[in-house]
Image (cartoon, rainbow, N blue to C red; front, side, top):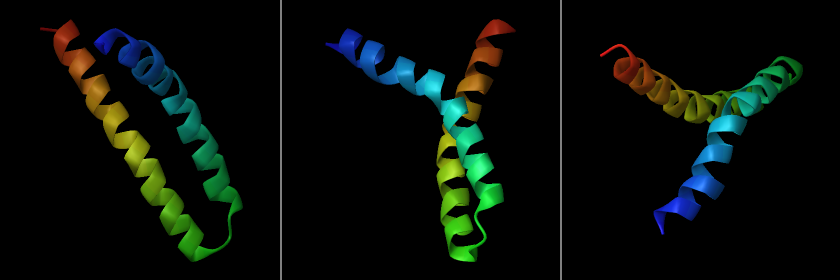
Length: 64
């Protein structure tokens, strides 16, 4: 049961996460309204924090 979840949920999320951050960053520079920028910043942090934790985990496992 866990296999399909990883294959169809986690792997695309890991691949598309950095792409989504780039798109959100480009949108951030194009949007002039303050409230929209604040919401976009929150969305970027929701993507950035899990990616950072995953990168730290991989670094800890690799250099153990």
